[in-house]
Image (tube, rainbow, N blue to C red; front, side, top):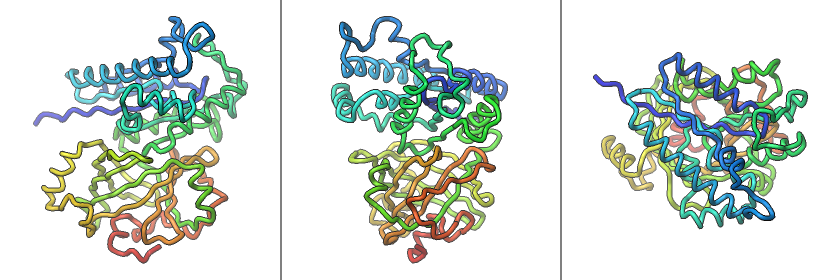
Length: 379
């Protein structure tokens, strides 16, 4: 039986001088030893700025520059995607040295929307196509003595500006389903920081095993307006194809982002292991594929078929360098389910001070989404 081709798309992002170049070298080296073919998509800004395509008094304005940059980024992503499909290798990782949403850090929301309209594309759809985003925090934030830009002639940011860009870049990616933040806290060396990058990579490619470290809490939302002001929003409908007593579940996730009316569909397989640990894999599928799967499992495509479906609103935000999401259910009143994903099980969860923690339900089977479809009185 022929092995099915597997293509994984990972974005490396972050502020200047965080270690992306070293991370790319480490990823390509380690994965090649494990039999993976690695494609690296170079940073577009670094390619075009030294050639004279840049913002300036006698050069381009921001919208002109970003339109050209993002047009080239989209073209490169298509090119590398086609190359991955042509390769004879069965296990392929495409590493993006920055992705489509990085440009948002250098523009206003209004200008970002203008570029989107000029190019006639939906940037959120492109962002959703990445399997994972790894934000590597600049050394200028927590490891200032190691901050340098000697390896990138297109960069000239001071440490203060680097910290500002790092925060803006991180905010540009809030809302992605798998965003990992690799900071400088609680690491004893740069090598240990790179170890955490590799843990995030292994968690999505499934080697050695795709362990997802997740903690879950019931929370009381004290100030909903504040939560909205710091969060990115999506509406999710999950339909369960399979679920068994041993903790395995297969589901289709329909995701609507912000004001977007065009959903993305994800096929997710999860195996619950122990408290805070899951085996997880996910891939984007088309609406047609979603319909075919639902038909195969004899499930009506209509969202009103609710006996195996659950709809929720999800708010993503960053707090103290950790990536959280809160799920709000129609039956939850003023309570929600807070989740945080970590790269190391020894990391301490930094619970947000603007939420009242009702209880830790990480190991409580009753609060799995599949069980909430049956018993909506748990919240």
